[in-house]
Length: 208
Image (cartoon, rainbow, N blue to C red):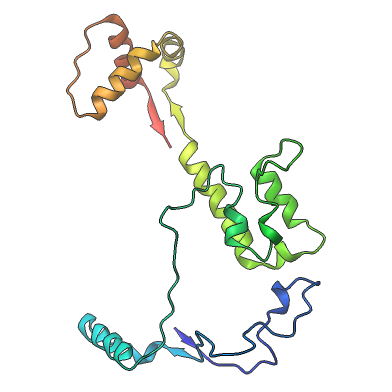
């Protein structure tokens, strides 16, 4: 990876800046800038072994080289039922931490997907011009669909019989069998309800 240094009049990206942002430049008024990168070249590290990279890093620290540290909370943030997730990720898009997805201030029920679409149509266009917002919103939707979506497949000639078996399953017996199988127990069906559950397991395939 080669990143070349390019002189700019300021460090503000006009494509991801609100029309109400009138600041000339983002930065510090006084004191040392805590972290600055002028250029990174992969050629400097090409061909280095793992030990050579470690030694180079140690030399950098011993020479009082700057280090970028990105902290995180002790508890991971959930992407489910978390109105403060997006205000924490994009504080410049959600002033004062308000307006998160599915927050209690919304007067009517609206899905997260619909709210994400509405934010992209916001008159200020700041959500459209933030490249990470659209990507992250899409990835979160894909993760949720992958973890919650699934369906059963069954051969056509066995469909009627399998549908009848599914309608007559005892949920308590099914839960008991699932728990025993998860624990690695070898289960031999003895009752009619257990045999019915195993018949359904034999007939269907699960696709997630």
